Length: 290
Ligand code: NDP
Image (cartoon, rainbow, N blue to C red; front, side, top):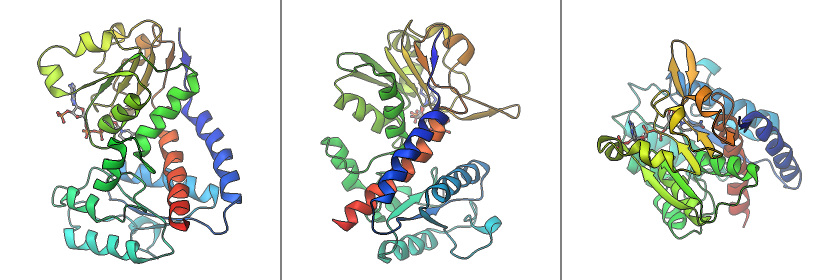
């Protein structure tokens, strides 16, 4: 029977830490978020807004001054030039310290071009090529909020990662790849699995030997409880809605019988990620203050 890595409790702890950091600053960091009118973007926006407000971080949606319900950009209608216009405006505004664009972006938007457009010092999701390169060389100043949240959850266990077998399932640019790099930095022997691993029928074998498992594939309960290594650390990043209920990528009930530590869904990675957005906004503020 495992210990629950309670993301809500950890987020509360982080909030106290961030509150103290904010007290020491001579101005209020300002965060700007480009969100979309999709259910998942809306849920994320609400959580980010409420965390920022509770900490006293300035937050304004992508249409300044708009009524709450119309803050998000239309998923179907937003154009590349409009997104670029919003980001240029925020880049140039010295009062804006952190910029966050919700992912995924609509298909009519060139996501790579958008990542490269955000001022690297304001890029609190670490998606600008300069920030990706810094991460590659273990010199990141600001990195993927979800990847950093995963590392914070693992840190809470107190288990040293050096020499451990870490297996990440999913190789996306905002979760799988960056967390793989951070695990490498801790000298965990790191394997990143993806759709090719699954097609080759090798996913189960990799998961079975994971001392640290990070599941970020976005497939409801795809990873079976019986695959989980006894006494492992299990981080479930997945957010999937099934029959009106939110479930992760791992069969939680069975997995918790085997793991030493496990994150619930909801209430695991999500709340820590939201707090990491706030932490990165403060880091960006400090970076800009020199
Ligand atoms: P993406 O869809 O961008 O990436 C999913 C990854 O999983 C891809 O690399 C994909 O491989 C791989 N994959 C898909 N199916 C399989 C499979 N059957 N076997 C092996 N690999 C597979 O998603 P994200 O990385 O953005 O997010 C992943 C999940 O985490 C989602 O559920 C998302 O909602 C959630 N999430 C949660 C956050 C939180 O704070 N809690 C924050 C961000 C995301 P390929 O590309 O080769 O197909």
